[in-house]
Image (cartoon, rainbow, N blue to C red; front, side, top):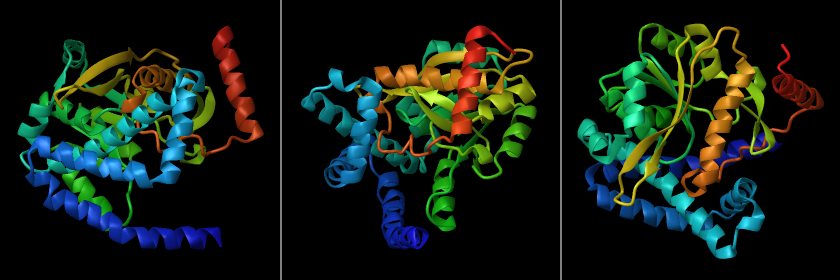
Length: 319
């Protein structure tokens, strides 16, 4: 019954999803960057006003990240509104860069010297980020450095919708592969000298390649793909994100890097990546997508026991 109800909801949602994608192609791609932001900010304000469930979920996630004792009602609302705005601006950026992609991406983003230095010294590399800032721009700027990059995109709505969105994301020239069955093309890309770009702050079931880690103190199953790929290819992992600037542009900043080590632990490296992103999210919560159910998957007793064992071994240095 529940599955039938969810299928019905998805069916009702499809016309609106197609409308959004149609607007992206017909409007977003043909306006100035300033006008793009005005349209996106209007959509974000409407979304925040009427997305009651998403707003409450965002509030729960924000209180977990910042701590309820550090939030006033005014500050809480301001951060949540900015989070919605950042999310819609990033989605708008996907369509906006479907035309004149190279020039538009170059005009709206830049790397810090530390990022440029890392890329110059490491080829290929595994770039890990999350749904924070303009995550779409990060892989675009890597490509503009004269490097090949393979990124992953999840299916959204119908196959037709997914293909249209992937077409937009491929407009610059980077390779985008579907999440299902992505491991082989990612591994092949690294072996051929291409970089890999991954977002790791989404729920990935253990039977689909996820491992349980701590995210803001709570157990969450996330993709172990970056650590697995590093173990196979010895490519370094760099954690980075794109910070919004006051002038509407973005600066892609280096957070941390993790070189390959012999005998490295897949779970430990995955936790390293998540912890590095977590520290940055705590400093810039309004840039993070909060209306996502990061903690919807509940661990079983055996999952918690395994996680506790891994954490204990890491603390004590056990093998």
